[in-house]
Image (cartoon, rainbow, N blue to C red; front, top):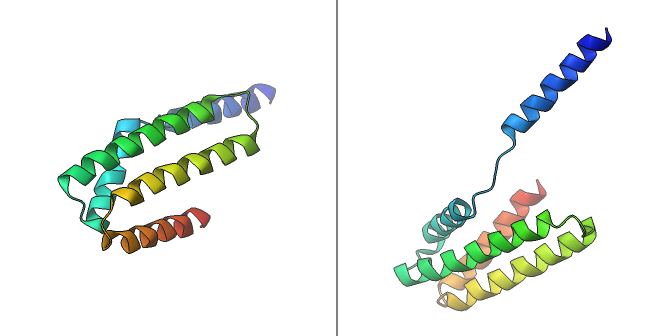
Length: 115
């Protein structure tokens, strides 16, 4: 009976590892830029600048999450600060017509995150 339970637990552990996904910063940045381009109709220059900002944010976020010496609260605070900084940089790049759409995009994103 013990062997059966241990085999089952080992199987579940193996499945969990199989479905764990590595975050590729470049792909994440491209997805975000594509989504923002659809919502805000970004120009080519804006797309390039936003891509760099998002890529920097994703890399920093991965570094923060991989630092095991930080507590969960500190990680959460640092990620929130990082996100606020990145959103501020993106907002500075936008035209007056795009800014309200960006605010709406962020609100939708937060609403989806809470669900």
